[in-house]
Amino acid sequence: MHQIDLIIAQEPYTKDNQVKGIPQKYRIWTSENGKAAIISPCSHTVLSLTPLDNIIAIKIDLNQRSCTIISAYLSPLEDYIMDADLNSLNKTKASGFNGLDNTIVQQIQIANPELLPLILNRCLKFGLFPSTFKVGLV
Image 1 (cartoon, rainbow, N blue to C red):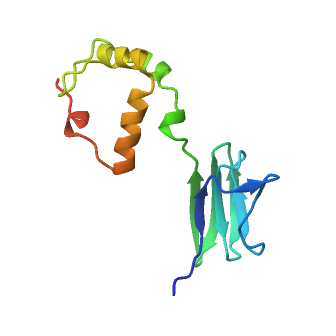
Image 2: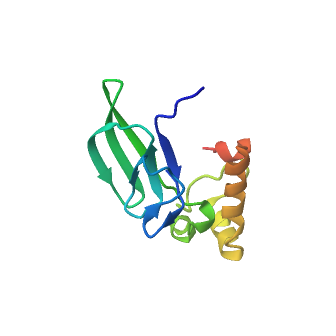
């Protein structure tokens, strides 16, 4: 039988700014926007608490040792606006192993803004990254 000490959660179900579906005896610490949470069925001694917008960090006493636990919310890439980042790419950098230079990548984003986030999300979902994404020619 396993004993749960802590649960790290992203986007827990909330209603009226309270995490729902968790037994009332559990302790819950959430980020300021409620998208990251740390949940404990045990009564840990909290030494410090740092709630930020997308992050909650607590320092607790765990087995007589100080331990920092962090839960951070990272939004999906589909919600991420890539235009500003792509516009800042250096156009004079060498192209990658796949032959795509930064100017071509920027033009792809202009022509079809959904394509690059879709490709990146699929890579993350399946944990597969083509070797040509990882190698640059210098």
